[in-house]
Image 1 (cartoon, rainbow, N blue to C red):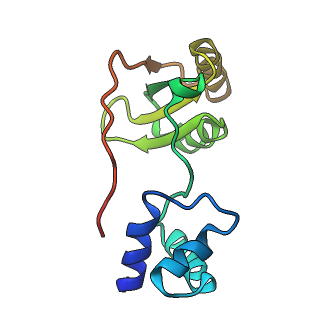
Image 2 (image 1 turned 180 degrees about the vertical axis):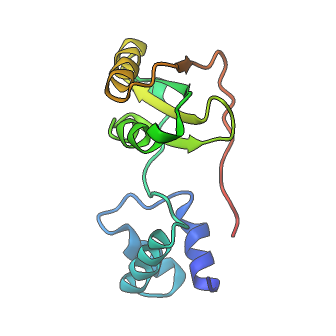
Length: 148
């Protein structure tokens, strides 16, 4: 990564332009071209440095709920389980951990009832029955911005 890559990464983490051509706006700020910024962002995504670009919303403020989930997934079912979980639009993160509860993911939905129904569907589709729903009792929000 060169300095332009780092500058782009720092810039896109907060105050992403809500314009028809956000990368053109960023390019103007950085004194380069839209094509160059798009090429850099594409390359950073291909390398896995950028996972996703999108909005983050506080679920409760838009009428949704969120929860942290974890499951005990045998190694031979990991791929099926991850693919199944990732197929649900309310799943925002999915991580493998070294623990007996080895897959952790967050779920956002219109209600906790919908989340429970979806977890039951995941269990049915994968044969993984030990899935815990761990809703927060208190939310502590931190700003996740990484200066590159």
